[in-house]
Length: 131
Image 1 (cartoon, rainbow, N blue to C red):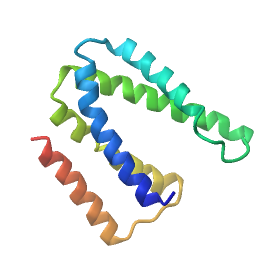
Image 2: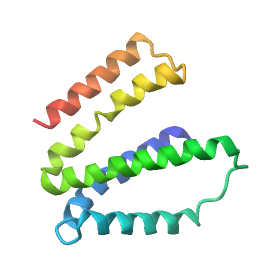
Image 3: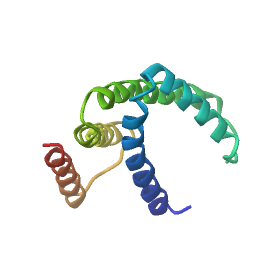
């Protein structure tokens, strides 16, 4: 699948989930929601075809990625449950700044001036949307 199509689908599904989470948290606590989330992720994983071999040293990195995702999601559930979803969701999008900085530092990814300005404008848009 082309990365642009995948990116569009991420935006679509994550956009939907913000509202669905807010509604779900009206009748399900955060812990129960996370258990349901885990069961759904496990069930869905059976429909995703493996793409290659598992390289042992990267299993630890995969575990670290999963744990940081789960911890972030726990705080996300707390924020959405107690705050306005129209403010919380755009603000959590500011995580892109962390990703961009870490990608530059640890992955050697370079940004030209146009991309830097684009990211800054996107971050400004997120802040303005949450006001």
